[in-house]
Image 1 (tube, rainbow, N blue to C red):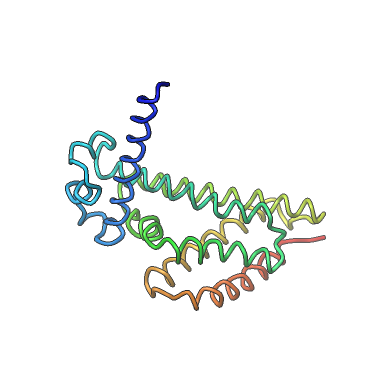
Image 2 (cartoon, rainbow, N blue to C red):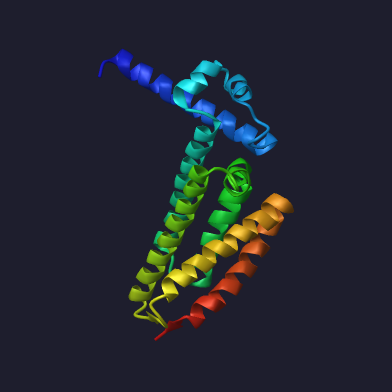
Length: 210
């Protein structure tokens, strides 16, 4: 590609990301329904037509945001899952990655994923469902790998998936309760992480034999 073509490509990518970021800020602050395309364009410092050039409508923006947030969250947790051995320390690192590095550090993404995307169209709901399925599968695969490395077995074939489903479900509720509804502080994160890890490790150990 020529330099001018590469420059135009970069400019398009920058404009696309600028619009997404503006929408993310507005959806988190004002709410999805109370945010208009015109407000997104104004914050992004582009025309309304430019927004429609990159996105079909407001819902399309939300879906794209969900996809990006999901990718970032899976990458963040995946890095910790790769190192995990399900000791207290490694499990706590996973908890910190979610609670501190996602929930506390990126409140706009947290609000969009757990609050603003809930109860929307079937397409948005499908995006939410798929991310929960993917996260569950990531944890399930990590659990199976760790069991193999430790030469341990699960008490049943459903145990790895059941553990993963419970972990995802617990942290979804923790995110909503402590960071969306109660707006907990940084000082609360360590205690929340330790207590939730202790609770879940007890359940995990009961489903492992050998």
